[in-house]
Image (cartoon, rainbow, N blue to C red):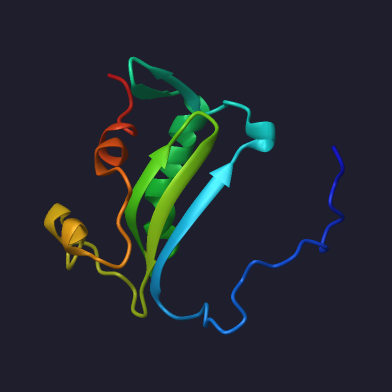
Length: 126
């Protein structure tokens, strides 16, 4: 496998888009060589291991570390992670206007492709 020299990757950013504006951001993080290191799927449910639980904790900590960030939907899979964050102009006030399920379903800007899996796949096993 050939390595790309640092700094030589082609940017996929849109040249005319203002990335400093507030809005929703969809992120995907894939493990090195797509190794399954976050857990495994048993009977159709994701079972997080210690690394998967670490991803979950860090995801939940993001708004504490970055006051302008609110969490939307996310899913942790064995070899990758998807999440949607909302970047706001003003620091988000906890409890003031958090997204409710009905607001999520009404939002036409960006909707998860499988809301059931987003809500259920991230529950740690009892």
